[in-house]
Length: 566
Image 1: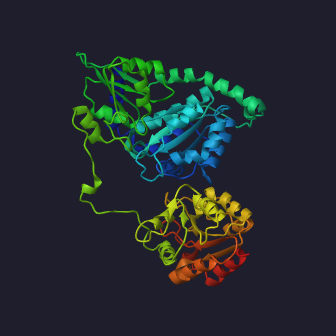
Image 2: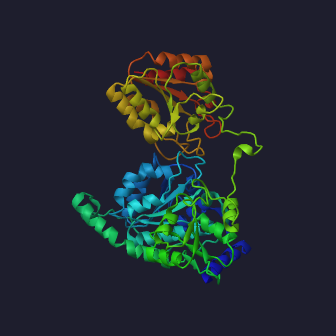
Image 3: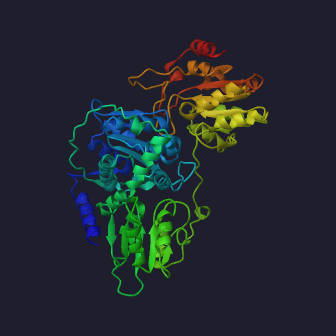
């Protein structure tokens, strides 16, 4: 109870002392927490709801002290931060939950060998799938990797946990996961910053093959060491200031309590009856014995957590006979999606769970749509006129072509899957295959399947939509259009030619028009092997002036086509 009161007092002080606090989103709080922790490096590939972490760092860093980069994909982002950390400096890497799938090979294999400087992996989960293919819960990756995970309930905790995560990372010599969910990433609340870290470090790349040369004999020893640290990490988690244990104040035999984490604690703090017990689990690993003591001291437990029924499963295993565990698995809360105040209130008040039916709300449908001046309109209008196509598509603005009024895409799976799926279709002899992919996605995961198509002589057309930016996530740079960054831009047409693509034809949709694009695509199906049709036109929001806006002459565009074609 005292811990809960202290935390409430801290929140009230933060709200009343505007001179010492800022209103920040969770993403911004993580960025500032990492900055105040003394990071030397930060990397990411953009993806909601984690994009704003790096975006805010770009706004506040001193480039002479901290290097911040947008990486080609999440695996490269993680490996770059890992190298900095192994060299003894602190590093932050951020990504969305499905991005961790891309980075998982490097992440999983790096955990037993660990780190030297602090390494924090900030992951944004999306329980409601607002802009993601799935709702996966990053806590399962923690279980697989054997590292520690922290989950903040608000922006202040996001800041404080980020600071703590760097300390824990160096103490236990492992990466630490910071799990945000959509509402902690974007929700705004007061944050009081503390004095920046004043430690000194110097980068030194170690020569330690007995630790970092991960072959089976080394790996077995490293795993044993990692397992031996689990109990100590769990004790650290239990004794941390982020853990809250409030005993039930009810005198009757019916003792009720809430077991919660993250956003679940924010809801419990606001809505729980004062006499109810509360245990806030701030992360994993958490001692099973402590969780069992709390559960066994009550006759009814309501579990509030974002994502899967992770804590609820543990509570059910610990519950004695007669103890009622309520949550997603019991049907008291919906099995999938974000926790809603209306459903939590219904459970607390003993009312029947409300059913929210969107089709009964008198709201006009508002599907995402392509920006009005975008050249994608002409491309998708042209594709709609073509018959008998297989059109696997990809992540990004181009996926909007699968929605009304065009509806020209057969499916969207994962980054780069348009070309990978096209390879499978071509292997079985499918004709008239049009794989649709954006430029940022092509760099991220589209190059390996393109090589597979070339190597096997697969007959397909790759429609590569180059608008000079990663538009859907906020206009981050792409390698061939670095927006003034101090780097050497990649020559996209040369890259395509180097992959061995049989034919590459660049076109401007505004000059070619719908009929011209339709004919270009139709003619490509008669050509052998893998072909690339390279759309090149600006994004009006994020890359104005790219190609067409600078008045690039038709002659120059034709020169590019000639140079790219084989």
